[in-house]
Image (cartoon, rainbow, N blue to C red; front, side, top):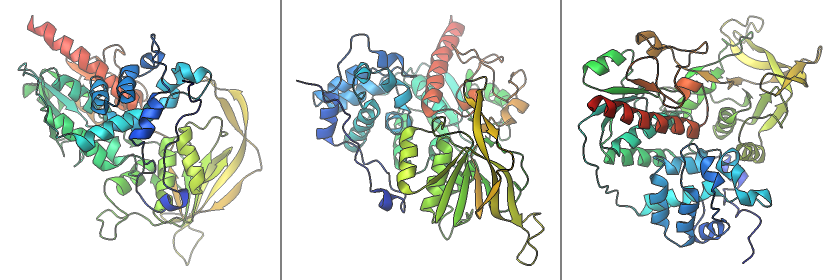
Length: 472
């Protein structure tokens, strides 16, 4: 039978409808479409897709199960390697990882690996009774700081080996960036909750509202009997540009804006942490977080939303799918533009005083691309005299985040780099402190969910070896 050259399309909500609601944009494959997509897999012997997956999911094996109609079997194969399959199937950038190495992709479109992973996970969640055969306890305890993707992955892998794992989360809800950073229309919180519940069924204990470095310290965790500590606290400290006007009312970091909308439900009339219902919004940045902030602002009622990015569409770092969805929904991309000032006024009587005032616009300067920088990306060069003002009443800064220094400042012997990231042995996640491991954004700065999961998986293996060596 000839191979179908194109991926089976992902059913989605109509752009004009979804731009006004927070329901998930992608509807997902049904059984018929999933089997048809699985039949495109060539089942390569060398499986280059597996090597390109940060958590090494057995991709051809799970796809073969779907091809045979054994959907629960497909989930079982995935869950051997991944603790968060329903999450990965939605937010993992498969196009630059597993799918980029798909042999079929040499001649045709690659197999929709992520879409099939999502299908298998959703099938399991809809049909499973949640019962799990608990592994035999090995009597050892491990503490995990942070319940984001790296922490949950580390916790899940260790729990499956019989460790008693306790996860400490600073916020009131487990999930880390999966719940506060990624909007409902991309990753429903019910999905995250189910993934967390699965880990709890394995015996993982999750304690919320515990700020390590304040409520407890790493030293106190060891004193309490934990034999190893994994730091997966993420990178929640927002970066700003340092331009005039960033202190005006109506300027948000993307972290604050998305946390208020996603976690605190600030768009509700009775919210204790309300959010500004802006009419014209400028989002500065070109990554996935910028896309999330822009599309959230649109759903909150904005009439006009701009993406301001200093390079071209070719260099835009966001996933192509997210960019396409944003364009379909009406987001206005102002590329090769760089903000130089946020403009505002103190009150209606005196618009000349910008101190502690309200945003009325953002001044940008046009750019052109020059020579490549140290990472190979062409540098944006500002064009003198090309400044102009966009009329907006809200500006969201989405240019990246850094690790919070709290744990570093309260943990002796923990080395960090100049950006505040914890220094680790990349092959193990070991830090400079005995018994302390780290991974994810706390090490690398803001990165992808799947890379954080890979780091959690690496650390779990190293923690098991570390504790096992102490037993001998």
